[in-house]
Length: 208
Image (cartoon, rainbow, N blue to C red; front, side):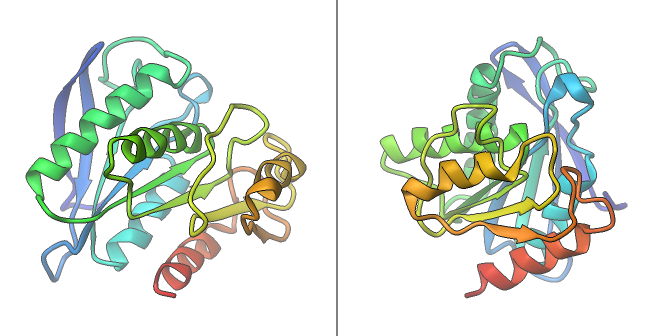
């Protein structure tokens, strides 16, 4: 993402996992953000523009931002596991980052397929008595995958004209949870020419 991006690997359940870390430039991190990318079988990588936009938003909030390439993407080993193995690997990234920065709160964020992974990870962490501080879900995968329910303060951002994951399916998932959804007018699934709204919304809503 920038010249200061650190590259590292962790040992995943299906082999080595390729990761990247960005740190706030002017201060020690006040939290950790784990960011999950879109579907690996349809070109999703940790360098996706929405993923990088989320990282920039969390950097502006003072968070250390870690992301990984899911199985079979880039130099990450293994094969796609429909979100199950990917959740296991994201759990390992969570363990790595919380050991590296003990005591810091952890935010979970994802785009598209990545929202499915992060909803599962949040459910897992909550069962262990250590839930994430907060979630940010962009292009939420509700209707395509069985997303777990999420906390009431979750930030959900969706494009009005998303034809990959229709807005109606997201609203059907959010409605029983009484969960607000922020809709960006005119935005498609990849938020072409609308990425700045994501960064502005995350920064503003996180600080409320």
